Image (cartoon, rainbow, N blue to C red; front, side):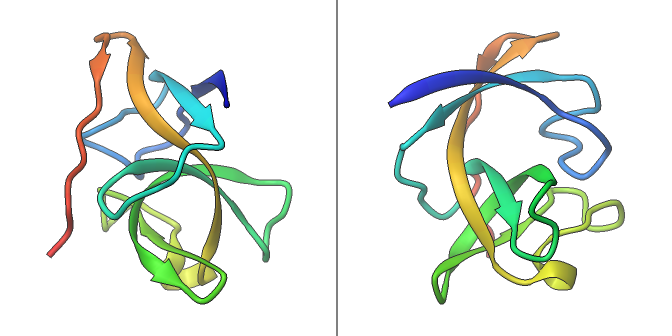
Length: 103
């Protein structure tokens, strides 16, 4: 498994993550519902997004942004391929990200 830094863009994961936060993502880690994950969309293969894993869906995952009013997610793009699990925020407030199971 490998780790990579990822910069967050946009308001979709607010308040958990904000625009310009830098996180550490672990590629090859198994996602669980509630995890923050790095995903790729079949409909937009060049776009990577940081979202919250909700449930397995077909061959991918149903994912949502924590900000329902400012997120492009599975509600509009369908299931996503999870590439990595985000475990830590590196900047500006370093710390571990916790799972947040959705109802």
